[in-house]
Image 1 (cartoon, protein in one colour):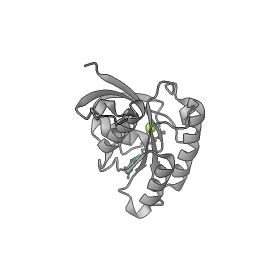
Image 2 (spheres, helix red, strand yellow):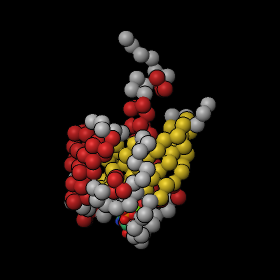
Image 3 (cartoon, rainbow, N blue to C red):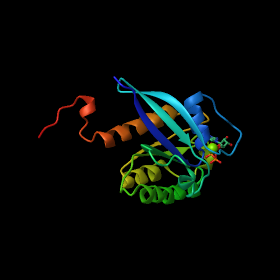
Image 4 (cartoon, protein in one colour):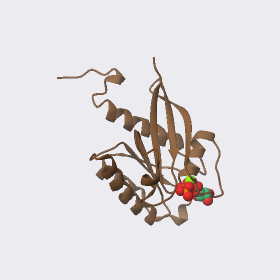
Length: 180
Ligand SMILES: Nc1nc2c(ncn2[C@@H]2O[C@H](COP(=O)(O)OP(=O)(O)OP(=O)(O)O)[C@@H](O)[C@H]2O)c(=O)[nH]1
Ligand SMILES: [Mg+2]
């Protein structure tokens, strides 16, 4: 069976720490602004192997999507905010609008991620606020900590799930039957 290839674009705040924790299993504590990096990783999903190209974009603002030379051909978007920054959460609303304008669709596969859950005392956003926005967007949501490697694998599994759901709306791939 041919291996599937999927392209994932990571946008928002605290992207690199999260991406590097997933791909290389370590936490980068210091901050280095990214130009743009693409990582390759094989993700196991329902017994299949999916070759993921994960594009770690540059910048925290609404221009990051437009700066990405790879924005065409993206299958799914991971939108990251920090639970310690309401501003980073609000910025994602603008970023999502830009994506929809850019792709000319009214919905794209998205995983909304609240990172930095290890910083309990600095929280500015509740889990319910994150969940609420995801419900409005009809997308997946999770909180995570790149520092503690909590829920990092889950983010990418949710992403593949969202992408496959969009590409195979009837779920033929999972071997389920369709009732007409
Ligand atoms: N406490 C804590 N700090 C984190 C976590 N994830 C990232 N950071 C901190 O955030 C900073 C790194 O941010 P990056 O992931 O490089 O941010 P970025 O979105 O890639 O930034 P640009 O490349 O400039 O767009 C570092 O100082 C990390 O220590 C986390 O889960 N917990
Ligand atoms: Mg970065």
